Amino acid sequence: MKDLLKLKSSLAEEIENILNAQVKIEAHSSALYLAMSAWCDDQGLDNASRFFAKQSDEEREHMLKLFNYISNRGGRAISPEVTNIPVDFESFRGVFEQTLEQEMFVTEQFNNMADKCMKAKDYVTFNFLQWFLAEQVEEEYVARRILEIFDVIGEEGTGRWEIDRHLVKVAFDGE
Image 1: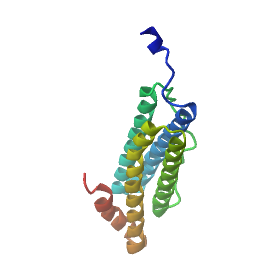
Image 2: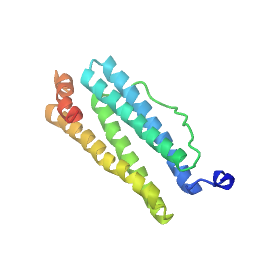
Image 3: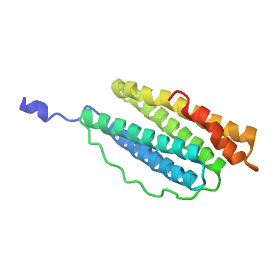
Image 4: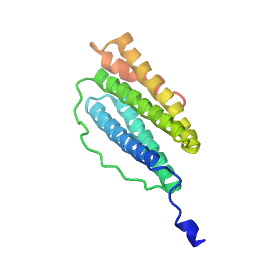
């Protein structure tokens, strides 16, 4: 029994490192979306503010899911330091363009992790990552759909508030 307690992590060091790197990315995304929520709130864009607050919560949940996975596999999960979060954004459309860019970056990271897991023959972690990969399809879809609303309505005149009103259907359907 004593020897069992001394067993190393069932995660290879490389896999543990990339998972911890993703923990940091998810924490950064959560903080970024919270900042976007505050900015939208300041602009009087209540639905967008609520959308980004929800996104921030989801990213934190993703971070914790990864963090707990590392720990549960006997690895050393590292609480990330989050820095360089902007407080101002150029435009309403710009926050959604940045959201899509962020989600595409996250998708790329998960694809890279899945590839490394396959090469390392860590099929358990590869399987774990499938949930995140499926989630990324939805995340990118929603960001793209919201940007389409900008293209249809435009931000001129009362357009910003019309967009804010219409993004509810895309952002909160299924709640």
